[in-house]
Length: 402
Image (cartoon, rainbow, N blue to C red; front, side):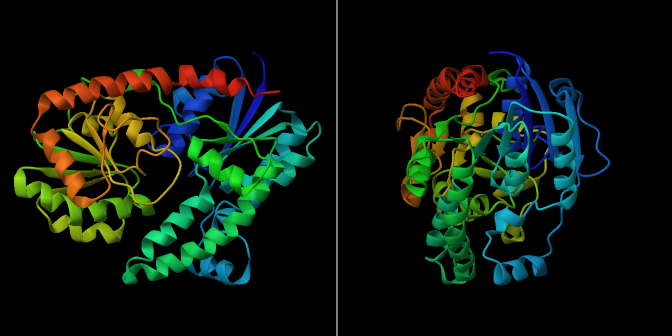
């Protein structure tokens, strides 16, 4: 299949690909650009100059400054509308104007709507003549993510305000996400679990699973570690203002890391990612924990990990951080939710643990056994190469194009 004209609508510039959404969108764009004409309309700080790799992949790029919603505006919308927060997050008259102008000037065979935040622009796409094939890529099953967040926060009285917010969003997204899925010509899910949740949400829906992937060549196992990392480094990477990541690190630092350090006093936790939330500030006082903030690339920190951890307790979809660590031949310990969506076997590609004691013991066992870490890493990289390289996934995506 060649020669399709494809328009991507994304919530952020997908290059450089430094976190989940951008990694997925760049993988799709770069993979499709080899055989199709790809254009991009997205949000970015102004002025904007595209990186050479992005400019080479796209026939045309246009950006609009991302709208800013104040806390007072969000509270007002919460009280005065029935819309979920995600339906209002990227509402932009200028983006709407630019999209309308694009659709008037040229036609597209396919439009990728990359995430539910872009769903408010469906009406313009539906009205376009000729009407393009509308592909909604549901990066997370959003109603399920909020349901899990609500149930997790309910266990902690100090987080009941968060539980209340998530309960409202869960109910609103249940209705809204179903509507969006039904309006699209086809829906992509990132995992079989998400696809099942979407089918339950909108009976009759038949999502196609295109998992998160990566370009394996960008993840060399022999990448030099970041300076200052010791032999007993435990690493987590991700956007650190993202609620599931915050929860994961607070749980791990309080419930798991002390148990690890009882047996291995030199163990050190590296939390690598941009915009650490103020809820993580108490961790800065612990000499066994380093919060890096934004880094140029996470690869050197992953390379320096004796053990990479994914202690997620809320969220949905599949986590690219798991693939990144496996691609770099790191030994991974994850909760079952953290590894959700990947057909892994406990003890084969990684170790799975949900309780603090079990999680700590799994990490300790690997810190004490370099040979076992190396074995897990080799199997993990082969697993990623076989199933999650974009060279494998892009043909699967193209097969659903009209």
